[in-house]
Amino acid sequence: MTRENFRILIIDDEKSFLLLLTKILEDTGYTVKGTIDPIAAMKTADSFSPNLVITDLKMPVMDGITFMEKVKSKDSDIDFIMITAFATVETAVEAMKKGAIDYITKPLKDPEQLRIVVSKIYEKQKLTLENRLLKSEMFQDIPPLEILFSGIKKTSNEVRDVAATDATVMLYGETGTGKTLVAKVIHNMSGRSGPFVDINCAAIPENLLESELFGYEKGAFTGAVSQKKGKFELANEGTIFLDEISEMSLSLQAKLLKILQDKTFERLGSLATIKTNARIIAATNRNIKELVDEKKFREDLYYRLNVFPISIPSLRERKKHIPEIANYLLKTISLRHGKTFKLLSEEQLNKLTSYQWPGNIRELENVIERAVIVSKGHELILPELSAPDLGSKPEGDLKSIEKTAIENALIKTNGNRKQAAEILGISLRTLQYKIKEYGI
Image (cartoon, rainbow, N blue to C red; front, side):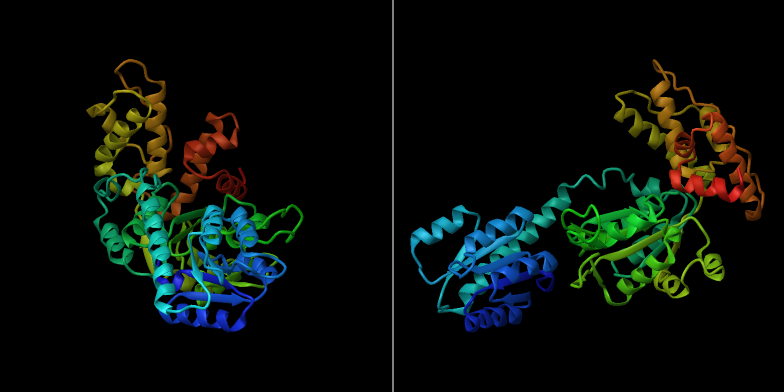
């Protein structure tokens, strides 16, 4: 969090004092909005999403404490400083009991007093954010980098090169190759203070995806009973990961292009412009250049997203590294289920390396987890692996192989599409799209 991203809302019915505080804090580097009207300030607080509110204690229509209680009922993380012309212990204590962090007196005798009070709150919030990230469990599912990038040093080097920059990244790779994990690694290595927020563009119906991305105001549509922040707003100062970006509609692509161009957007039902400093990482398992040629993906958006492309090889292209990846998965999955399987036998490893893994690492993980769950005693029993052998077939044959793998999965699950999607390591929506594409 930088001072520029620390947003301060000031409410004081004395305009000259309001302008004074605004200038002092803007000159210090903060982003500030001010108003003399507490009713208007309620709406401003919703759209501006301040980190700190500085409000007069005594105002017509609504006093500062009432204003604070209303705002905190919506967002308890917002801190408050009270302004009072009555510098008594009683008013200060009352405000602090209600949730204020500090207070300042009117008239302001020394601008440095205001800077110090605000700086303490800024540093407190910055530290809180950093602690939340350190305590977060979001990266516990990332394997050691030597496992994740085993056999793909080029990919590893590209990730390290781009992580510390603000460049938009496009990840290419088949389903299950670990694109989400790579996106998390890039975020984790970037040093960004905000969170990692991901969304699967293929898993959410088109009519809901827009509100998930951009948020909405109360009453924006039927069922919008309260304000909701979207993924881009939540990811401010962090990273937003747009998985299966190729499935996004052309109308939403236009809105995404606007964010890439000027870093601004509006919630549904609002005219207020919101700025975001979220870094964008997108991913696809399809050839977007072909989609551009077919007019199914915007060319201008393609070039905006494709600033730093990274291709993640399939598991069959890393076959000699399958043993170390599989043994790592066995150890972690066994631990998760309270079992003691630690190493795969040579026969089992040969079985795994001779299989072509159309679902890649995700399918390998699913196979090992199923084996751990069903196996008794100390003997691990791997399930039969019956997908067709890709051998050295050219890329053009992959569609027929993919179709066969889908048909086999549907046969195994007696037509249960959800279970088939889990076996293949893909989303249900992607499976349904493939079934339609191949006429299965």
